Image 1 (cartoon, rainbow, N blue to C red):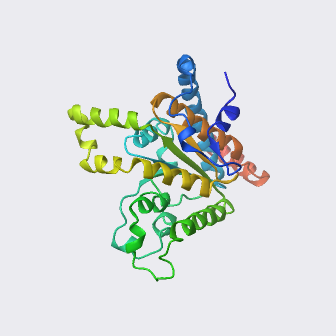
Image 2 (image 1 turned 90 degrees about the vertical axis):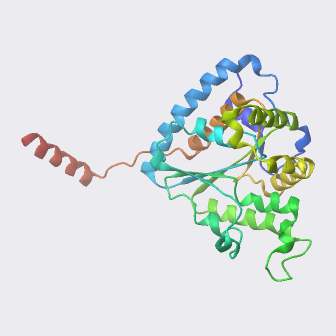
Image 3 (image 1 turned 60 degrees about the vertical axis):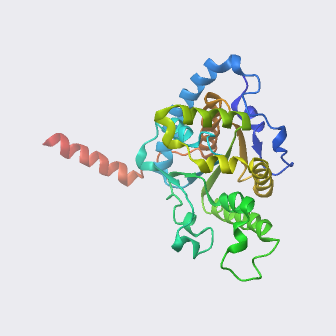
Length: 291
C-alpha cells in the first residue's frame, strides 16, 4: 500500500507545474483491487479526524476551511455527509452558497464568504464558494452586467479575480487558517449516468433540475474554467487537490486522507494547565470528595 503522503502528491496542485485537467484520471487509477483495504483506511481516517478535531477545538489556535467545488452530480453533498459524519457538530459548520441576493450583490464578491469564516479551533465547509466568481461567472460572462465602475469591467476582470483570491487566501493563511481546496473531478459519462439515475428513481427526482442539462451543454467551458482557476490560485500553502469523482468510495477515501493529513500537519494538542490551575483542580477534587 502507498503511504498517504506519497499518494496525495498525485492529486495535489501547488503551483509548481501547470495542471492539464484532461490528463487527470476520473477513477481510482487501477486501485480497485485495494478497495476493501482503502475503505477500512477511510474509517480509520474518520476516527483520527475526530480525535484531531477535538484537539483543534480545545487548542483554538488554527481553523480549517474546506472548499468543495465540482460540477453537478459529482457528489459534494454525499462526500460531506460521509466524511464528516463522525465529527462533533458543534465544531464544524457547513455553508452552501447560491446565487447572491440583493444585499450580497451590493458588496464585493468576497464579502458574504468572509462573514462565514470559522472561528479559531473550528472547521468549516464551503459547498461551492468564492471560486464561483471564476467558474460560473466566467463561463456565462455574468461579470459584464455588474453594476461596477467601467475601469473594473474589462477583459482583465477574471484574471484580476485570480489575484484577489490568491491574496485573500494568503492573508487568511497568515491569520491562522488552513485552506483545503478540493475539486471533485467527475467524467462527463459518469455525470450522464447519475443524471439518468436521478430521473429514473422517484426518491431522487428532487435532486434533478432541467437547468442541470442546460449547464451540461457548457461542459468544455467549465473544464477550461476549472483548469484556469486551479492553475491561477494554487500555492504551496493553499494547494488544490483534484480528486477523482467517478467512484464514490475512492473519492471519500482521498478526501479523508486529505483532511487527516492536514490535521496531522497542524498537530493540535490539548492545552496544558499551569501549576496554579493544577493546584486549583486538586482543591476542587477535595471539595467534591468531602461532600
